[in-house]
Amino acid sequence: MLAFIEITTSPDFAMLSNIHRRCFGQGWSAQAFEELFAGRAAWAFIAEGAAGLAVCRILSEEAEIITLGVLPNCRQSGIGSRLVEAMLEEARQQGVRKMFLEVGEHNAVAKALYDKHGFSVLSQRRHYYRHPDGSYEDAIVMQKTLD
Image (cartoon, rainbow, N blue to C red; front, side):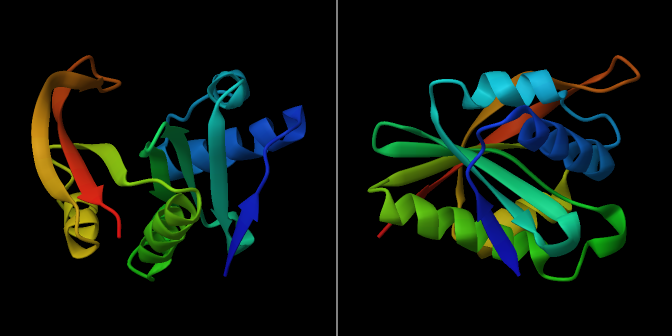
């Protein structure tokens, strides 16, 4: 089960930060989430039991999946797919025509998830992600035209 949440208060940002850190090991701060939601058309979905999250924002008739993560012990359970489906449905309801995202070039699981949902490769961004060890990874920019 997924819950759409309207992000409005500091505790909400702390919750997103906590889930994000648990999904990725090194997550965004509550302040980073607060800045993301400030003055922008952004929304989030949280999986039941805080097993994952997806955050998206609208930029005119386009939307971007900013982050999507599932806790390590909950992966391969369909939560990621349900989060993508929820993001796409909400975007359609808001009149979005194209959805974009970036994914690490070596993240085969995430790339397969997005392929499964009809996203296609648009371009590549060199040295987009910086890893804790100081190395960099290119990002694959993907897009999907919505019905």
